[in-house]
Image 1 (cartoon, one colour):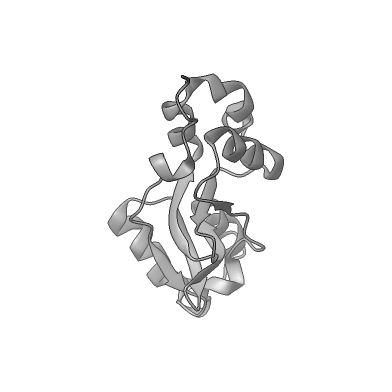
Image 2 (spheres, rainbow, N blue to C red):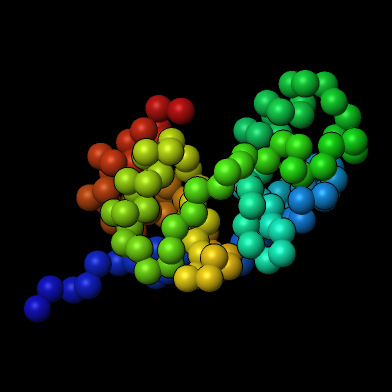
Length: 140
């Protein structure tokens, strides 16, 4: 009998750092630094609505030379947010990430509530056979 495929729930980070839509970008950056995260999810009413990555901060705020104390999360986050249901397989997640050209994938339950997050490195580490699908990440 073959083993059931690994799901994203099996490997996801459960301690996902989040901020509200109106959080000042300075506070988002502080949270990223304090917890050594390169992505923070933006939530509204308990559901993920966007994601802020280090790249978002650099391109949408710093490069634009706008003071970070005057920017709120929803002004720089990536939206719409691509998510996956917690019982999806790692292969499903890898294909979705490749399709959307993303490195972080929030995990939701059937009601759409945030339950975790995976990134490209976690997927390849958990299943090295998925490296050809995830290869796009190394070229960024």
